[in-house]
Amino acid sequence: MSVADVVRVPERIISAWAAQDPDAFAEVFTEKGTLVLPNDVLLKGREEVREFMKNAFAGPYAGTRVTGAPVDVKVLGEDAAVLVTQGGVLAPGETEVAKERAITATWVVAREDGEWRLAAYQNTPRF
Image (cartoon, rainbow, N blue to C red; front, side, top):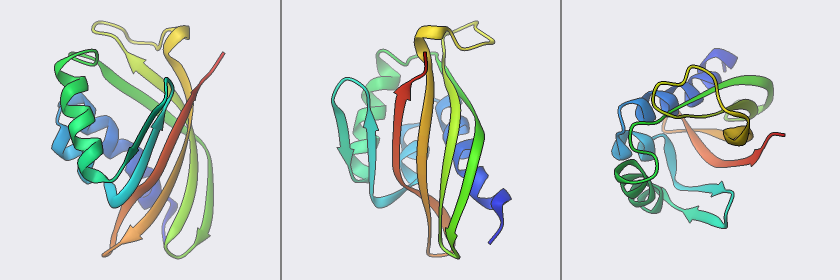
């Protein structure tokens, strides 16, 4: 197991978001992965994630990007790790995350069929 492989998971999310591609975004998750966001968003499974992001990219997240950098990585075994990142949503034209959109996120990643995927994701505002 390589820490570099684990930290590629957030990079795949950043890339899928930049492309505004809900399919690529959802494919980063395990089949039963969860996504927890502020404002009572709890998504269970890849299909719920895909549908949510499809609507988000067509609505409030249209034209946005995300950024994030690992601040902690904990290897839990050969097939599991936890990452903590800091970043947030960039509005069109922004190069730095505005304070009101800055987050700290926890990523639980698992190797599934030889590929690192996101089993659980949760973020919280960073003040």
